[in-house]
Image (cartoon, rainbow, N blue to C red; front, side, top):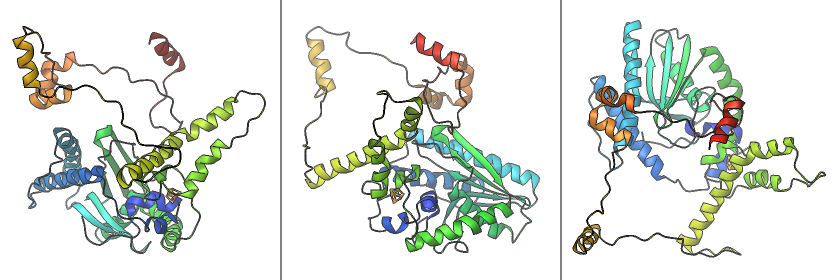
Length: 376
Ligand code: SF4
């Protein structure tokens, strides 16, 4: 990691391909490293170390204040998956190639386009790129994922020097969302995408050409709070004309549903930005003021409270509670946990939610949904 900053970073490729001038617009803003990104980097460093150890390569265990049990567990899950891929590759190929945190260069397609693939496993037939995503926000899928397709192009360039690769395999592993997906594409189809989509859109992005277009890719854009195209897209909704009859039709409600997620995330971005400006920089916004939020009463010292209550004769003041399931599993280890407590653990049905058709989860049948609602 580190080194020169790529102007066309693969991790922002979804945004660049959909909204090419976002690249030059974002260059006006300072780099912002969020807590989430710093935690993600720490998780990746630990994964790199553990995989290198398995490959008997030199590596020192990194240290970080971010290493909670939960993060370590997520990284462990990813590392187990990678190790199973490594062992399988050894079984089917005499000379597989393994590379952790492999620098990938796709500047044959777009100038200054390079990045780092978390794990690469190359056999005589398959070039497999595995990407660890430690985010807990939105699930990300491998199919047609431009970041991984760019890594695929870069790795293909190297792998084809060794083997006649038949398949480029792209995997996204997102342990904290229990989400993992793999997508295969042929080298020819990948190169055609590189020539016909990546090259022209990438050139436009570097020049600041093309049209601004708002969508789900705005989520991590540095211009998201100020962007006029994004504001116009959402404010257009507010201009929906009132027509007769007075109630919205089913089609109109479906229109609102389609954009409601994005609309909510845009509104909360702008709100968070404006609030931060007011608190940190004293900025005043017309019609708004800063107030103190509600707060709950707290003990100044638990020890002193226990002492004072006991002195007054109140002794039944403590609650005992079991440690949470993840913590219990960590204490016992997966096998013992499953042997001793497996039959005492169940997974309640998830809350029923309305999502767009494009969502990967399978639809539940309507009778079940109605029955569930009545039981609540
Ligand atoms: S916020 Fe969205 S529309 Fe605006 S520049 Fe960024 S990606 Fe493009």
